[in-house]
Length: 61
Image 1 (cartoon, rainbow, N blue to C red):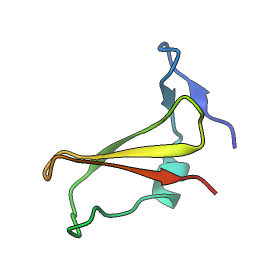
Image 2 (cartoon, rainbow, N blue to C red):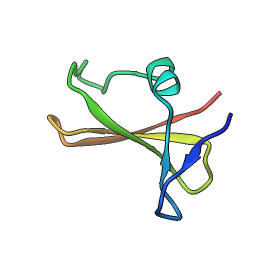
Image 3 (cartoon, rainbow, N blue to C red):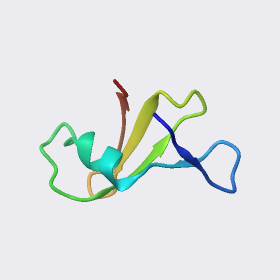
């Protein structure tokens, strides 16, 4: 999987099709939109639920 590098060294822009593929809900079945990014190892999507103030990670396949 190729991720597009952004200006910051440890932040990558994930294409929309990948975001859609890996969308998931937080522990309380949150329906709110979240921000997605990858960590420095590029094998996780970091998921931030702004409404419930939760921060989760999901491992990429």
